[in-house]
Length: 301
Image (cartoon, rainbow, N blue to C red; front, top):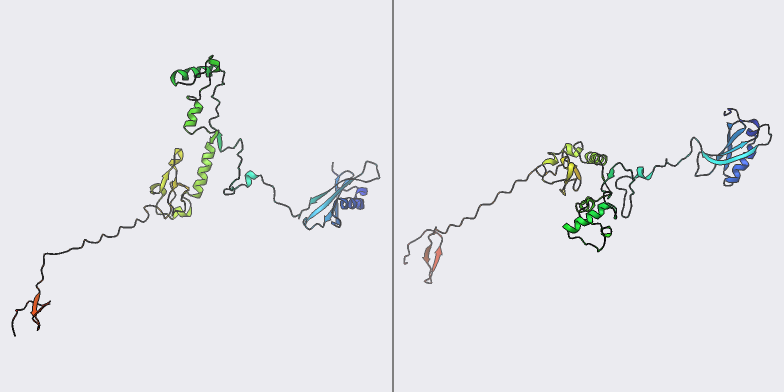
């Protein structure tokens, strides 16, 4: 049981504790004696102020003890410990919890845990039979008959196992030969993120004239997500190239404000059937000149 009262002989061993602290500390960095704390029966820890500039509020803790019925105090350990007002570094957080979207740069590698809840096993290749199993021999014979597979002379046991026709080959042809695929939890987590970033509760969607479900710039998605999300393809939209909720909307909606077409100007009219009369009056030198006024009779002076 821990004693509340420090042992007298151990509490008086201040000089011994100070000498031990000065031995491990930088010269001159052991300050005043602060307290003597009882750790157990005949075990006392002496606390000294630390004068190191980078360790404000820290204390040198030197533990001393003595044997039962013994008169000699011995040294146990010396260590630098933070005090109640010590300047401490932030609590360490694992990298997986510190990482935020946008932190990755070119060349960075992000490892994914084996038990990541966002993923689940995809095609693992476990259906592929061992090379010398009866199933593999049967597959080799069937493929040789139906698909003109290469057959090596000899017993069926040494025939190469065909990849064509197996589950793995079909999965690879369909682009599904992935070790892990998105789990239901990962799908819902992604949907929640997209809904929060570009969903109906955002200020942009609240002020939009219409939703994305009726916008001509919306590109549908494949799979079950197409029922709730699409990709914006409007370069003037704040969500261009982003996954948006069908309930999202912005001012760049294709039908928000359709500009009317300018009126087509009328075709020019050229009337060549009307002839205007032109009068001719004589001049002194015997010639004539055209007059734009009404026609006159030609006479002699």
